Image (cartoon, rainbow, N blue to C red):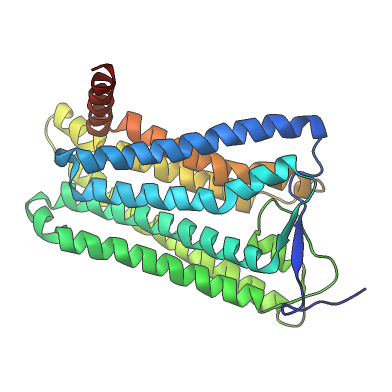
Length: 316
């Protein structure tokens, strides 16, 4: 069996959806295409609305715009290539393109988690320390927080990608996934360092994601404790309603990630993993703008006003 290392391996083959019935592929293509386009349009609409509505120029919506950007870039890094592979007979991806896809997917994926953590902190300050909100969440401070999330996400993406692509790949170059998934790629590597590298990558990813989730949960513990001290039921409901959209996205984000990475591996897991992974790479970004648009009353009203103005201008 020929052995290739990272300097001579020219391409990988993405097995992806190859095991599915051919008649199912056009249906999946149309479904994922519509979800992809909606994800792009929904996030662009949120960004445009926040940009044009001056009353939305607050830290919470600044973070929401940053979240929309990370979601757009995350889906662009993965979904277009997946859509092409669904209708193509050539499922190859070059070594460099695979490395780039892994870097960008990790970068924007981690940035997304870091932004959700920062948005939880924003809700904590707004509810638990309202008098200090303008000081703690100043425009400059919020800009720095966003910059740090992107910097940390880029660092995580670069670190994991460099570690993985400096391994030696031997034998088969078939990746049993529809994109350059790190664990699927590590199965193609060989050498004495494979176990330690795999364990290290898993620990780094899990530590970062669980750390973000822990800080989000901690923020909501303080938020709930503060809300319970509000005497009126109407006041408690009104205060908690400002957190519902963020909390819902956090639950969806981590629930689908847990389903993918914590599910037991069965004899048909290779065939089912690709379909299951789309819940995280396609379905979660698709749901996010819907949740923020419909669960956030202020944003929903702003989008309605913006659409009405555009319809009026078109008629006139």
